[in-house]
Image (spheres, rainbow, N blue to C red):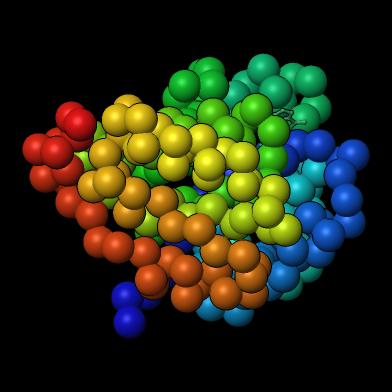
Length: 195
Ligand code: AMP
């Protein structure tokens, strides 16, 4: 079994969400720390980002925040994260999220999380990023987005060949299994990037 040393997690900055999302985030964080997996995330102190960092720190795991300087200036950053990378802008931050990770994991989130996920799917389609992209579809939160992706395939905007770009799972405690079960992908994807 391939060792999962480092993953990046995209997730919500909002606090105004149901407790079930926080609980799922804690469970996923615990599973990663137990596996000695380093977590990379957006560096926030609130919402699922804050809970993710709090749990990894509590469990004595390793977490790295990546955030643009302007967010630090408005005190968005988590004060107890041991390692931080501050970037010039949002574009550089998204680029940094993908460096050296074994997988990207998307938890429920808002427009920022959608944007991060869609950029990752686009780069993987082009063979620029090749690692597993995992979506936690907790209680059907991502059903509309997954339906949109299905619709894009059905209507010819993506091809059936692109479907293995993302892997959907529903049990936060089974995140490592979801990564292992993700279909292999290579840089040659550029050869079938076009529909
Ligand atoms: P969202 O899924 O819309 O909550 O977006 C999460 C993303 O929004 C983060 O990765 C950031 O790009 C940005 N963001 C918005 N508010 C914050 C915050 N308070 N702290 C950190 N990042 C934030």
